[in-house]
Image (cartoon, rainbow, N blue to C red; front, side, top):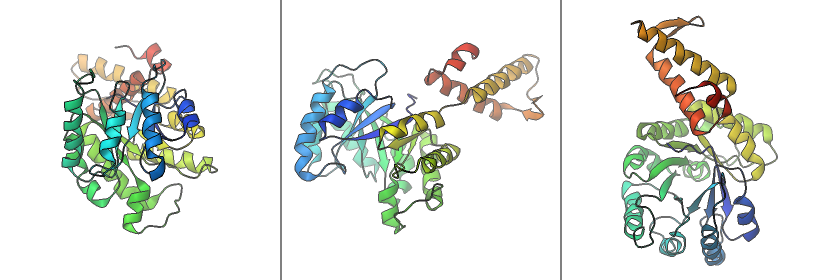
Length: 301
């Protein structure tokens, strides 16, 4: 899994915002042609995004994804014509409800990639789950194409379909079931689970509380709408040095015990068996994927 913690929406019709976003420390940017762009600005967005994708990519710069209009929408074909080109790393598919919708885009990409001299299967798909029907189909959607790299929860559209209030508490209790169900669907397919945005830019404490809960629910990333949200999200979705150190000590102790023929051990006053060790190994793998220094110093192979 190519882990990306922070996914930032960028209005595709705003040249200045695109230029700035290309140099930010978000793990991925989602250049938007969908909800963030008015109908009379969509042609501008397609043109500007196409130009941005053609620019050379600097080391450690964000992955470049594009959120197109909904599958089957009259505007989708124009979106794909404009943005499927070298430099595109992935598409964000909004409002997905069925496997067939994802497979339709997969087939289009499979047909176009060789013609454009792009690597076969190279364009990934982040699938947005934004409705009850989409949530009920999330598990098969997550495994229907090798291009699917993650599921992203769209809280605003989902909440509207349920008739929920537009305001959100920091812990978003009204969405816990739906968010957890999407995490389980993503985990079953070994793809990322990306939580929705925290929209109140003035409430930094709310963002932190929401992101902490997201990680506790099993999300590995969040979407965001402002550069000020990048660092908190990157930090909260990364293992801490203490977590990495503990994980490495657990793995080392278990491997030593295993070499002696012991299947479980007592470590730090806790019984350590294989499920706990596998969780520790996942922490170390996450640190490796994120190139966190503590891992490089102490984790070994």
